[in-house]
Amino acid sequence: MKRVRKAVFPVAGLGTRFLPATKAIPKEMLTVVDRPVIQYVVDEAREAGIEHFIFVTGRNKAVIEDHFDIQFELNQTLAQRGKDDQIAKLQRMQPLAGQTSFTRQQEPLGLGHAVWCARDLVGDEPFALLLPDMIMQSQKSCMAGMVELYEKTGGNVVAVQECDPADAHKYGIVGKGAEKHGGFEITSMVEKPKPGTAPSNLYINGRYILQPEIFSILEKQERGAGNEIQLTDGMLKLEKQQAFHGYHYRGRTYDCGSPEGFVEANVAFALARSDLSEKIADIVAGLLDEKKGTRLRGVG
Image (cartoon, rainbow, N blue to C red; front, side, top):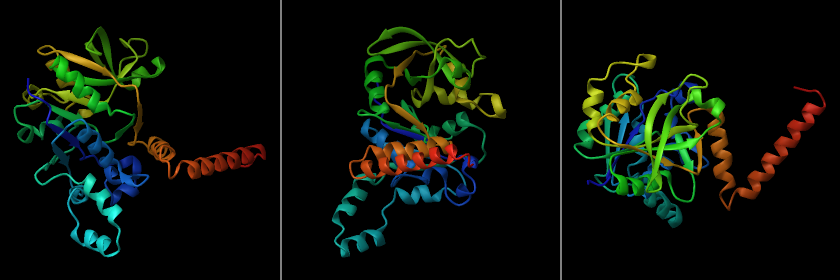
């Protein structure tokens, strides 16, 4: 069984929910505290043992490539100012030479098409897929747990979390079969099931380990919802040929593709930092008290 060495990051989206900010800045480069969103996702992959990071980009995304490159002028300035801790911080986040690859998705044809665009860079081996809008917060990363499960089960692995059953129609939902090796067999996958018809309340949270056979399926995949090539449709076909296992992730997930999720992530990650937690907690408490007082006065 081949191990998971490569990860694909689809970063070609326009980020329209964050306009006008994303008119000039890719949504993946918006910062949660002091790191771009994409950095959190790459760090998660690195913690899981990923060695090669493949970015499926679009127009106006060159700054992502620049972020993962060395900026000699910055390093020189930091060295002259004695900022050795900052230099070390940048070096820890810096992929080694040859560890990053970039390819273009020239048309916005959906997630399935974005994954297919990485086919030649992935080759004939299993790969991780991490949706950059979703960032995780837990002691052990979601992808690290998925790789551990994959090494016991092989096949394909999909990470899931629990949602309110009343909200199951908003997500891709899996059916849960027999538990195995700390995960479980996936018996079905349904994209946004009709209310009351979901096989469970376990939703797919944006982390996958897939076998390379998905590429030949996506190449012939007809357009589905939104007139786009849907990854879920491709996985449903692959499920008929190969086993799928679910990894039940127990940490917190923040959807940074929405303004409210992005703000929540900033607060949560700031509160988790020892150098910021007390200050941020006081600021948030003060803002909430002010908001409560405004409501009591009948203003706003």
